[in-house]
Length: 146
Length: 146
DNA sequence: CAAGTGATTAGAATAATTACAAACTTTGTA
DNA sequence: TACAAAGTTTGTAATTATTCTAATCACTTG
Image (cartoon, rainbow over all chains, first blue to last red; front, side, top):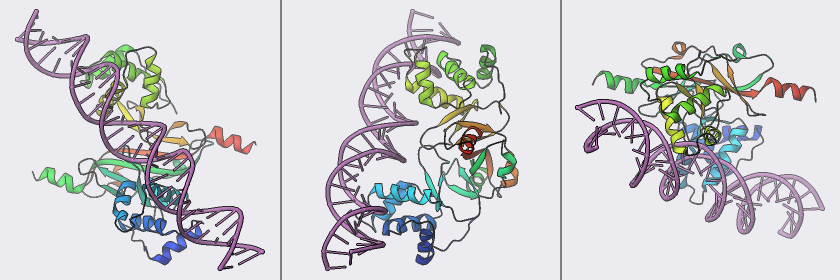
């Protein structure tokens, strides 16, 4: 399931502007990378991939950018995996995430969870994350046909 | 929402036995701790709390025990929080988790997510975790009455 | 009892992330 | 254009959670 999302300069600038985040070169690069790669990359993946294009880029900047973008709800942290945080573009319909235990790939997943239904008295829910794990269709197929 | 669960020696022994996990002293202690404290403790909390009672206990043993128990589906990993894994007793009705962003407390939460509904073609889902974040009733109340 | 398997230990190693201070850039204003 | 303030970036050090390793210990079975 993929929601195509334009990562044109103007769209991104507008997005940052609306959230009051300064559009520095590095922030734009990080954001564009997360949007274009639809693989929910880790901070380290982002750093390694951008390092070629921006030789002076530092890891700390990638972390700073990701935090800023996540704080502004432009990106969303995906914590389906022990030890590392992955990032996903947040400006798209709500969806859950699925991780294949075999190949490790992370897929978007339609989600039918309704927050209000689960809301205990007096609690206020800001965000809901649904994480599923199992075997993706590629890997399940491979097992069958073996 | 609390499901009372007996942590009597016999119940635990039986549980381990059924899963083919040897009931070593440390494993029992770790398991009992997670069941009795209903706070979804971290490995480190468990280690620190048990260290008094078992002076020779090592961190690695706590990690080993937790992994073994989670592999056997006796415990469940709760990864609602960046950087640390928490543990929850798995022998209870399915439920989600809620983390209060203010006080950090983690609550169990009734959950109305149906796996099959979200299942894309050819995928097999083994487990689903639902994590919500927001403001718990204690903390929300405090804000209002300020 | 001896062998073998699994559990435990302490400490070293690793991986991801955060903290921090210094250098640099950008912005708004004079 | 010059300036100060605010914001960004950098490199490095520190921290945190976790895993690895290799040696030792305990328990069961023949």
